[in-house]
Image (spheres, rainbow, N blue to C red):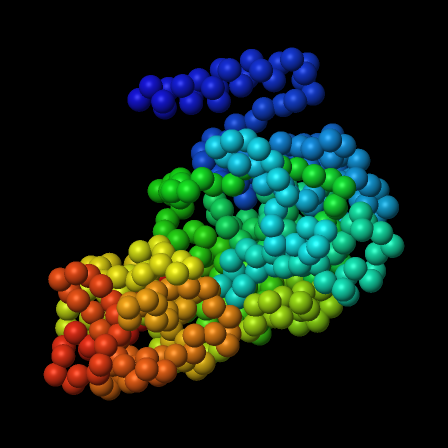
Length: 413
């Protein structure tokens, strides 16, 4: 309890006393209930009535030297430009700062996504470099990470702020990015504006959503975003996230009308003109053959990634029907996948899960009537040890019940 008390004191009386030193220039507003960061930003925009430009920074940030002027300069020339600083990495243990990885030779990257709407970064390519006169010039990005950006206040309101149906966290960075590009604005990354950001430490999964929000708020957010902005491309999202097909995501009629009344461009235009390089790094996914939990036939145990990625073993665990680490799909390319990870053979015939591209680890066949998964390169079958909770491949044997499986659809709730 002491930790909770200290936290409350720090964010209540101590914070209120701290901001007094700026004689009213810094204002503190408190929401009546937990709104989450998405709607808190919209509420903040309504409260901030004095300035022409709104700047959002996560609380766990540290600005660099001369970060402000380069960030707002493009907006002074074009009020429909939204700008984002380059986000440096702050080590949450050491509080040291270093540039993010994954960019080009100058460390420059564009914001992107895969087709399950996981945030990604792709190196700045030649098509964008050709538009610039020097390497410090702001450049176009299809998407922002969401926590750090500057936007002209009136333009933000003209865009309708964030979709009021988005709750707590997740997907809002894509929603505002698509809205900006498709409805007449621009999203620019600014190399000369640097802001450091502390990312989640290992093991920290974030706070659970409040009771009044209900289950799966992030997935519902994703569905709202793709239903409003992706047009026919939403089929690729559902191929990657099949459990969301029957998810109740609320009314989006007002958002559809906004697109129509503001003559916002199609997602096809956006993919051809702005986000043209994303399919090069994250190819459009093949259609699914089957998806759901992989249940050991006539048992209550399922294959579980256990949260492992990039080379970790999959295991057998009690089926929980909640998807997540037990949700898999097998597609027409013969990949057995979970999000952007594929199951494949590891050492000593163990089955591991590792990152894959569209043409990697195309090694599985599912024979639904036989309740069997075959590892094509070896001709062996997916097998398990219920006692040791291990998953592996071994010589096919029709008498072995440990080689029988079924895929059962799971829907998000």
